[in-house]
Length: 437
Image (cartoon, rainbow, N blue to C red):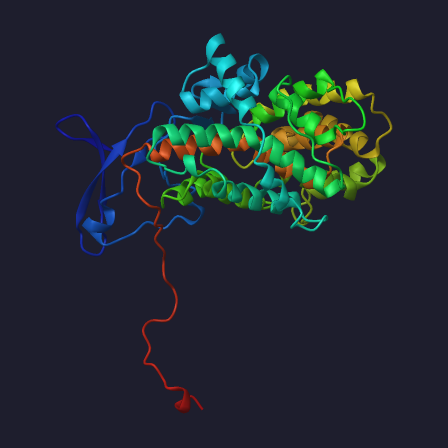
């Protein structure tokens, strides 16, 4: 790396074929790796870069979330995730992600009231649910219903209007718990429950999910606190697959409801949002505590395809900072519910002990991650595994809409148009049908 006369950092690339030298600017963020600005690379060299999965490519500039996987750091607008989980509520974190500062008391009250006022969905929207089979996956329902919001709220579709963008953001954050709870109720054959303005965000979701018209339903404060923390810990996670999907869809000028529906579709993939569901399937496969040593041995065997789900993380090469918060919450929920002699939870707790004490796991930093604990908590609370990714989508909506809003307001952003390395047939002469034998 060299510096220009005006003090700017650059790197020089040399084409081995032609010997041509090209100088590219180096851009520095406030923290984290610097990036080489290659926007003029093709124009000056005739070459594209090749980066499957975009794992070494910065697609945007963002001020929302910062991750340092090596150090186990996750910051939202500069605030550590464990501080936010310990001292804030989910609506406060939503406000922070949208507005770049924590709310004052007055701002918090106003924002929570806005979410309450937008929590109901159009009554005609409830008829969408009857078009699905009762055994439809809740994520399939979420994709359809969220995308359909654009057919009901025409006044917030103008992406170039700052007020319309704000209203759309509020509507999506407020209505997602209602839409998610209705997906659960529909699968259970139970009547929908309307939101209540006297309940908090997390309490309202639990009420709409597990309450019935037959009797009063009191939300357990320990469970609502746990639900609130789960939402906080999943609110945003930088430029992952679903967030990049939302940004790419939004780059074409698509309306925010369609973009969030695209994010939900991406999150549905088992390699992304289905990790905590995979944890439960793994626990079911193990079956009993006395079989744990067998599966631990298999996990250590390089020639065995078996993997312990919920341990380690693609991004975090150290302890997942969200897992530290979730571990405490997990034990609080299990204690509150008095769950004992539940086979899957017994297996999970024994696996946790092994992972935190076994030298193999410690050396390879295969610590239990946030998906390991959240899957256990959600099962203990009574959610079917099919709802796990729905809850993830509910929480991630604020991250998606914040990233979408930031992209729309960024004058540098263009419509997404990735390049490719073509390896197919070159141009061939066309052969008429009669001559093809």
